[in-house]
Image 1 (cartoon, rainbow, N blue to C red):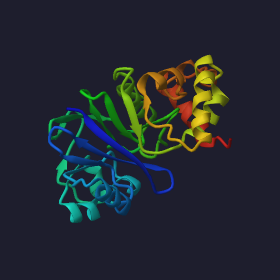
Image 2: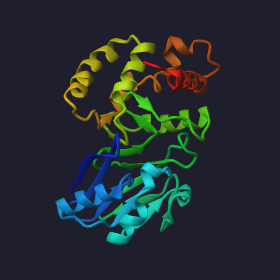
Image 3: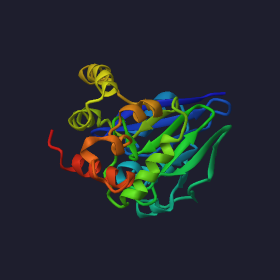
Length: 251
């Protein structure tokens, strides 16, 4: 049976996710930006909470762990770095599997934003929860990792089937689109921008996206072919150049 995904806004620009395995009724929170908002959504839906699955340690992803665990008795399953923010019940790393009833999440190493960042891929339902590794037309800031590490992480996500729906953690698409247009004049980006601008103007989510859409239009995945990265030593260096340009972008 399928996975039900409940998506909602919290904090200033985060997306919260509650996922329910329909075969068993077991529920997981993907990250915990705001415990009160998550609890309100759970209570409104009439769901319990069995697991908390963190992508990385930042407080806007793991800050609600303790309160939600205390309220619902959920087990916290996360990369080891999350102990900087809260205790965890099970540490996971690349290649591990997390079971939520009959749903299976493969843990993928997507370090770069933080060193131990992971993403969670449910192949049966064709979805991945990627935290701050990839956004619609963007990627996270490189707070702890290196360009080769982050580029390899993006490559692991890009290797997923093109139809995979990508659920990222923030609504940053407006600024990401402005930057993308400043470095990429491709027809694919121009065509995609029309639909994204309409959603932004209407206040609608631009998430989820898909791997195929991001491979075609995300400037970080396209970095080696962009003029801004001409002269880069290799693909990872091209990514470094584009990431640095976005860090300095004022548009």
